[in-house]
Length: 267
Image 1 (cartoon, rainbow, N blue to C red):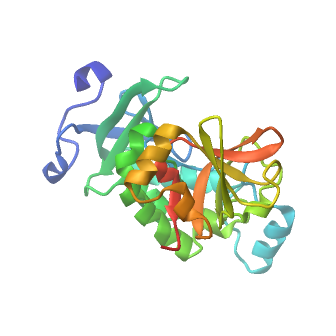
Image 2 (cartoon, rainbow, N blue to C red):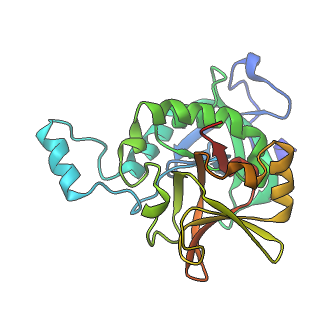
């Protein structure tokens, strides 16, 4: 299987990390903060994380002035540059263990992969703990979510990396504004549950037609109920939800594709 993928199979990493399904490889360079190239030319994307991209987190002129006044130049250009540099430092010409996740490729021909360095440390968790990425739960990365969230929590608590940037901090539901088609993290208390046409929505404001909501498909609701997170019991509790902000009927919403997109902050 791995020969077909073009992965090098020489002695590239510590034998202690030779876990089932992993193949030894050598990193070449980072493309950005969550994608990289191995020595064979194959491009990969880190499973379960999303790093800043150019243009969505550039420091504002005011922040540049503040950083300069403190004598802190900060990452050059943007959080995207800092994330890319961090991944470059980990993978460039370094031995790696690669475990493909899922069977699909993106439109650029990149496969999702869980990666560990020569010391068997998760590369994604290293980036999260340093504040260079956010957890990005999907259908094929659900099992990775617990350990990824633990790494992210450390950076968020320390206000480290992108969590120190107002463009990436958790938003109140009233602050999502018109950030459509961006990946956001919202932390607030739903005030009601609305059910229409088989879909359930956690409502975070008084106006159910315009205020922020989280839409939950029936199959996802069943999974949430199994975990004790039936939408009705979340009303009034502090939750943290993440995903792509969409507009539906004039209402800003996040579609819950997997239960792991929602964390209960207040038990």
